[in-house]
Amino acid sequence: PPNKSDGGSERNRNLDAAALLRDELSRAASAVDHGLLRGLMAPVVGPLVDAVIAGAARARELAESTAVRAFASVESSATWAKRHRVDRAARGAAWALLGLLRLHLLLPEGTPDPAAATRARLDRADAVLSRETAPT
Image (cartoon, rainbow, N blue to C red; front, side, top):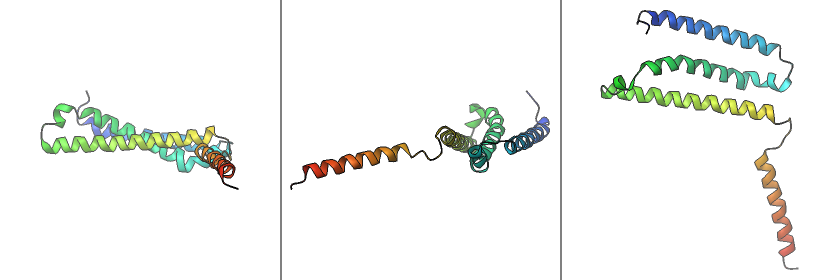
């Protein structure tokens, strides 16, 4: 296991690697010819990459905080629980962004919402039934 004095330099290396990854992805994004993917870079892909990088940075911190130390006192227990809640929320946000990216890339442009299409069919069927069962 690394000693505590290596923590700062390792954190700096991780931040440098994260910045390099962002730069590489930005360069790759500028070469993309896919219009939809290019449009999703800033609102979806960028935050997704940031969430993954932040999660990787938190992973080591969470791994180092063992359950033994976490429940040594009330304060450490509360801190441990708060870190895990924040991590779960951040992972949930990353999964939502990934799902949003997949949804936009898999559905063709102009595809209606499947739930809205089903609702429209039900409304039409309800209208037909209402006309057929209405007294004349």
